[in-house]
Structure formats: C-alpha cells, structure tokens
Length: 244
Image (cartoon, rainbow, N blue to C red):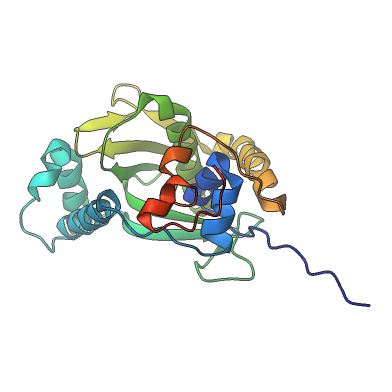
C-alpha cells in the first residue's frame, strides 16, 4: 500500500512568520514552506543597511553617530556607552532560539528549534532589569497598534524565559526616521516573571492554528493589492499563485 504523503506544515516560527500567517496563510506557505522569496525592495534594503550602521556605532566600530540616527541619538549613545564599559551584558544584533518547551536551543537546531527571535539591542539597567529596543525605519502606523503590542510581548517573554534572573523587562520600538518611541517614554511597557505563564499560554494559543494548518487557504485583505504572490505582484516578477 502506498502511503499518502504528509502535507507540509510550519514547524518553527518567528514573529515575522506569525505575522505573515495572520495576514494570509497562503502567503506564509509560499514564502516559508515553498521558499518563494520576494526580491528585496528599496525600503527593505535601506532597513538592513541602517541596521548594520547602528550596530557598528554601538560597538564602537564607527566613531560618529550616522546622521540617520540623530532622532534617536540619546538611546544610541546610551547603548554605545554601556557596551564600551561592559559592566553588565549588552545585547546587539543577537539571535535567540527556543524549543517547544521554551528551553534554550541554537538557531540551526532543525529538529528541536520551535521559536526564533532576532533582537536589535538590549541593556541591563541593573542586574534584574532589562531594557530591550527594536529599531524601526519608516512611519509608525496607529492602525497596527495591536501588532506592535504582540511583537513587544514576544520580545519580553523571550527575555524573561531565557534570562530567569531578570525580574523586569522593559520593551519599546524606536522609529529613527521620526524620532518616535513606542510606547511613549512616560508610559513604558513592562513585564515581569509573574507574566510568563500567561504569556506562554497566550502565544501557544496564537500560533496553534498556524502550526496545525495543512491547507493554507488565502485570506483576502486590504494588502492583497501589494502582495508579491498575488495577481498584482506579476508586474514585479511575482509567481501569481494567488487569485486575489
């Protein structure tokens, strides 16, 4: 008897993969399972280049702050000074990975890695408090507030799980094009070890449909007109594999 071939599934995730699936399961399949990659656009290329620049500045490889980062100069200079002193650990462009049991593993543990998290920058305010920053280019969009909150929740949860000595993690997004901090500095978003059980259950519930999906039905939405994998994407060399 010929065994029926098992459908492919998503077996490991990151915030960006989860966000793709939430937007459209078919997009997530084409991008992350079938590995049909959209060519980088100008905004993506710029974001990658700026990420390298601020990393080099924080690590002392650039003597002057690149002009693009003047709107977030205070945070950039603080991170640079903390990194130079090395009194407490400073994270710059780090990669974290966890198993299904939320245990630390390595990024390329293909058999056991369940969650991958890319961290832009973080520093210890003291031995028990971590301040974690994700750099953003472009504009802050109020309509994406729920997405921002989810992303920050996941960063905080990852830090608290992987560094159990921490009592508190403060997380924010820094928009260097606008000089905008989200959430505002006078209303910081903080999480403690008491939040970990609740956040674990919440994220396990959020990603369960994605991890179990074998059909990856398209989910039409207001971003279809920009999608590389749909009909409008053909003009950009897209495969046109979605009818929308």
